[in-house]
Length: 462
Ligand SMILES: Cc1cc2nc3c(=O)[nH]c(=O)nc-3n(C[C@H](O)[C@H](O)[C@H](O)COP(=O)(O)OP(=O)(O)OC[C@H]3O[C@@H](n4cnc5c(N)ncnc54)[C@H](O)[C@@H]3O)c2cc1C
Image (cartoon, helix red, strand yellow):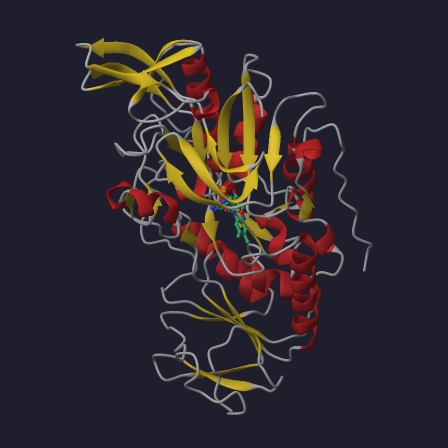
């Protein structure tokens, strides 16, 4: 049992790991960071598609996630993984498995203010490690008195950060309950299935669908590949980017010229594009796996045979591997369970300080893909959010007021089509090395600042 005050971060991916790295050198002693993740390993979504296609890359998109790889030697901070947060309480989180003997882990909050009226004194708080509750006020550092009926005033300083991101089917993110080994196995199986496939269909020309098609083309120059997209151009170029738009969790709007540039590159790569059309996905169990019709299952067809995939316009596309790149879902369920009003457009609704907009969860921040923080849901955006929330936490720890968060406007939307080709929505050149590395060395490996080094093996040239 630690005598330090816990600051809990839920989610050890881009947003969660970034805020930890920012807080570690700045936090005064007396605080302990607890980084929780449901997986016992870290993963890098940006490299997941190449890892599903190119042998060797499955070793480069995961890394060990533990106290030694994340935190400097001798620090009080701790990684709790694999362990899932299953419930949020006003001043504590509840884990699936015990940590230090308990499933409920309190996080500290400080109330700067006082009591109006004295209320009825109803006793001392039972134990120091249960120091947080809605009806308790810490009046002196080592003593808690319990009052009922006293009106509290002042400001509450939050100490738990939700960085729970979003869920997508593998390969984009590991499946529920995955281990590092099982996720890598899944990637290797996909590499084999794609290698065997005679005709590939990619459903959805968002960034993920386009990048998958590009990776497959580079590894398999002669394989027929078709992409089908519901809009009249790839991506979502209906209007110029509106980073402040928070109405829902949709693909970011992109500049029309980015779509046109990518469509030109797809043609050069001999990738067929079907626009303004949708695939008909049969409900599970309605088509026999032995039928010539596609049964709606993503990946390689169950008997390995070529199937007919129908579209809403009446077209038929043949494929024996179907990659479905739709279905990115923000992980906001923990908040929804407590307060449905604190979820907006599927994401956790935050205020201008990145705090959750809920009386019941007022001590929580939410950042990254799970949050309505303004702007695109990208790793770059998650990093910006982490910096904003970290600054406010440090200010609060020092007894200063939090600052309104404003995301920096510099933001790029890069779509890679393999290791050499791609387009970016920014007035800057796209370097071959940048495409080749998928930021694995610069952004994934370097985020581990623990006493134990993390090394990602190079991939042997084909
Ligand atoms: C194929 C692909 C390509 C991409 N390319 C780019 C790109 O080029 N540039 C870019 O900027 N962005 C890109 N992105 C987007 C980027 O990966 C995400 O925006 C980023 O990962 C968001 O980070 P996050 O930390 O908010 O969430 P996530 O990465 O989703 O991580 C959330 C973490 O929370 C954990 N978690 C969730 N619920 C719980 C719970 N109850 N208990 C414990 N742990 C929990 C999860 O296990 C996970 O580790 C890409 C994404 C994909 C899939």
